[in-house]
Amino acid sequence: LVEPAKVDGLYREDIETSAYLQRRQRRSGRESLDTGTILGSGRVLENERRRLVALTRRIHEDWEQVSLSMRELRLCVAMNGGLPLYEGDEKLRSTLWLAMLEVRQVPPEGYAQALRRCPSPSADKINNDAFRTLAADAEFRAHVTTASIVRVLNALLSAPDRSASDPPRYVQGMNTLAAPFLYVMGEGASFYAFRQFLRRECPLYARPSLPGVHACVQLVDECLAFADPPLFSHLRRHGAVAKIYAFPAAMTLSASVGPLRQVIRLWDFLLAFGVHLNVVCIVAQLLSMRELLITTQSPMAFLRSWPPLRAESVIRRTREIYDILPLALRMRIKMHAHDPELAESLASAAQVPDPMEPMSLKRDLPLSPTEPAGWDSSVDVSRPRARTFSGMLNKRMRTVEQPIRNVPSYGALGLGLRTAPPALGGGPRGMPVTRARQRRLAGGEWMLDRKLSTEYK
Image 1 (cartoon, rainbow, N blue to C red):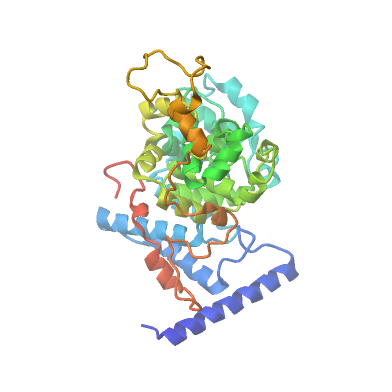
Image 2: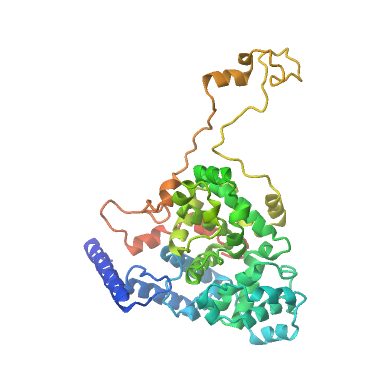
């Protein structure tokens, strides 16, 4: 055990080290981390990285130990806003991604056998889309060739061991979903990781007519209406609905937003806790633009091209928003990428009602019980207006407001004013929150609903 005074001293030392590393980074003019910023201090980052390396080398004797190691890995991702890795640590990241996807083997002969059965029936569509994959990202184009994208997608659709959960044919967006895997790991490992990703994480995102994507954008509207009713009402009044502005981000899990290094960090979080949280991540990105969107009369002009992604901020807001969502909405979010009936019902659902719109009576109801059933005050202009319920209400007040719900104000959160997220907690005023306390407080109940599979613990 370490005395509190020593802990505070170490915390101040970490801050000083972080400031020194930032000054050194500015002088050298190069980025030492894949985020472009320093996470904590160099020593803390190195300690977190060593913990990840130890996880990959740990020998597990039973599945309970595997479950504990996976929980430790998810805790590290949540606490650091992604995997705390240096630039060039893609080999370690690929190992951890395969572990989170539960890919135990990547035999090269299986991928070679799938390639021998190529081309697939969708080869023409794949060739037409492959060269457009993240075409504006120079770093991705320098590391990944168009030919590798074509081979992986064709092999996925031509493999001899295809299952019923595999996509029946190529659909729009599959090329962008495969891009992060090809960037992080080799071509053979990308084939197995991408196939497992589509089978277990988001099978309905790669189906004809994209039912999972349409359900996702509907849930984006529902979450935004609950988390920030004024912003949702403003966007809806100006014709900005999630089916229009959020469809690319939903279809590609924000890979189309960029930059790629921030997308990789966001995918660290999604692979650790579930791709269903993509719904809440999109809402978190909208809240980061709140003050810009709510003060303009043409929000679609800004939503056509989203600002660069900041993964650490989006992950923090995602956890905060998910904590306040009602249980029924959480369940729909978790199941929308797996349940075909739920996805179809969400895709064909009516537009989300405006929570800020005043309640209005559809029909003027007469006060007297002897009034004819078909009587309508809008036609009978000779009847006094005050004899109807709506007429009496209009005399007293023009609008009937809905009751105020006990929901936190996410206007402040959109500005980044909340410095102590509820998931991480905060210490007393003036006292720093140590890394050990963060690690202890970050394990909320929401981290336990990682997977839908019953055998996954």
